[in-house]
Amino acid sequence: MKHQDERFKGVRDTNIYYQYWLPEEEPKAILLVVHGLAEHSGRYMNLVNHLVPSGYAVYGIDHMGHGKSDGKRVFVERFQDYTKTLKTYFDMIRAWHPKRPIFLIGHSMGGLISAAYLLKHQEDLAGAVLSAPSIKVPDNISQATIFIAKMLSIILPRAGLVQLDSEGVSQDQAVVEAYVNDPLVYTGKTTARLGAEIIKTMQDITKQAAKITLPILIAQGSADKLVDPGGAQLLYDIVGSRDKTIKIYNGFYHEVFNEPEHEQVLNDVKTWIEAHLDAV
Image: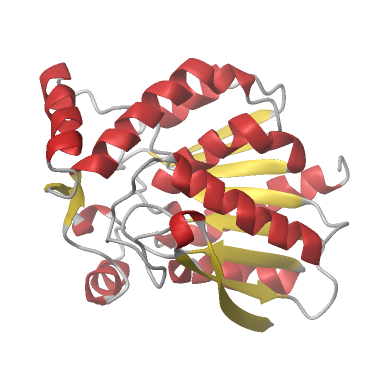
């Protein structure tokens, strides 16, 4: 396995960090990982170690304001900054692997970024795997709270609003401890601007997801405490794909790739991707 990392210029002249892992032979396909809120691309080593030895290349990107990329932590001017930067990275990968199919793998907020990306660029991809996609506005967030978040995003866009509960990441305490102690993981409060942009994008996706028609696999833990598990089913019901699969893992927490039984999930992902290689 070969590992390489580098940087490129994203939107707003931001230095964006990326890294990739290549198998020994020509890859069967490319897996483009889109990570979640407050974390980074280096937290997907279970996926890397499971799929690269099977002949897949894994490419990861740190979103602006995350990980090793530049930018105010967990802040974004517009949600499209994520998708535009992802498109730049995709074009780089396509130039490096012009004949290989590319699958998008988006987790949590990365699932939301991926869904927004698919609305404009799905024709370039062989399929998408969305893990615990942050699609549904939680039921306990009132319209008044949403209104306040929108106002704060204008008046005090960099103000901190909500903090993620690290205990909800995984049932594996070693994963939780690594998350808390990882200097590249942001454990403060999400900025008002990003919070408002996430809610706006969630609302846009639920209105437009029927336009998504490529093969899609959605994986969700039933005991997820960080995103509403109902969002996975909502997205599955709305997307227009004829070829769509949803897998609900009973009792699993948020990061299904990092749960104690993650091998089961990764085997399901591998099986699904291999079944779709012949259709490319």
